[in-house]
Image (cartoon, rainbow, N blue to C red; front, side):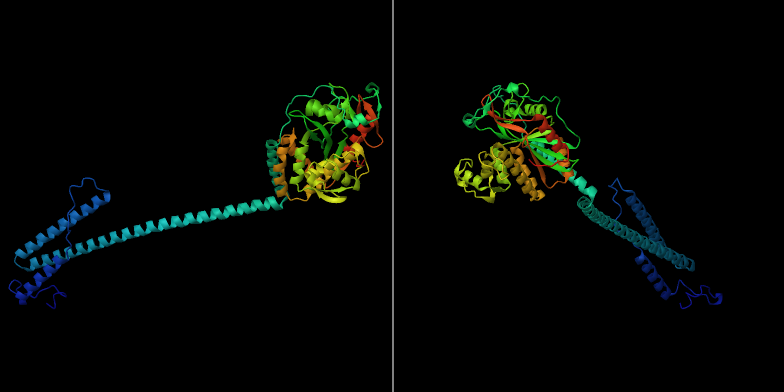
Length: 497
């Protein structure tokens, strides 16, 4: 036995009897049993009831069938070997068969291990791919958020700190403001016209001992066309309407001001037109300027001013006295300086309609809407400018508008935006969104921080203390005042009258 594994040759002279050796037979059968124990037999055969199999399942089943056939053949061979007498040839065949069975079993085990490894690798790859895809999605999301933040910061920096950005931002703001302007303000509407050629003779007219003259002796102007205008100059008519007792009809305009934005001279200007100025009215008799709007509305105002002073108007804004009072209150009041005579007059008359507010004093003070409205209507006391009667009253109108301008300058943009939303429903205008954009852009171009002022008729250029059909009127030198108006609006003259 010791030489069996080293040399398979036999000595002819010492021939070994394999069949009759009991020890050899016992060892041989033990080896056969050990080989049979190492062969893995399939526990279950494929289920023939399953007709539809996947390609992988079919291949697996075929492999199991082959292994089963090989195992059966090996068993038959083992049984045949067990039945045959143990000869040297049979022993060699059995040993070869055992070697083949062992090799087949090892190959099957290697295939099973390879299959398990392949399956595990595949699962790991799938898990890794899923985790990689998830990580990639998170990475892309983080990058998108970061990129969005950078874009927002970039836009904010561009709009806030660069000149082109500021221009775009301002343009957007102007567009929004224009849209709000057009939707929030009121339009001029057609209402019943007043009776033609009605003459308004008030108590003061009746008390006046002024000279009565024939209007036929007055050389009234008759400028043709729509009035003078120049590029870069915008004239807006500002009207204050007193419609007390008018019902649904239009009232008289006791405040008549031309507000000018001149981008050529970089200036803002206010020109007061005195309400008692005698004017020629298309389609009507000559009359006071303050009755024109009541007779024929805003279009008649444009035609009348073009015919008498050769001036073109680009639009109009009207506010009645009730809303004017509300606007002043929304601004928080105005600082107005009163003379001793003005203060006493306001305390002792009903010009301040609410008795509770008749507490004004001489000097500079904060006045509310009701007090400012009473101040704007004073005629019988000299203004701080020294002018009396209607001249002093037009001075007060310009003082109030200048105080409003200064008040607005002291407020930030957010406050002004909020105030605009409150003011607009109180205004009546024919200026649309495009017109508003043009005017606001023109104002920003001027960069003006103060307002120049003029009154028409100017001092020394008119006759007063005259009556026409019982009405006290002012008769200006129309040509002189027209030239002064043009020089002030279109030129660079800023003399105050």
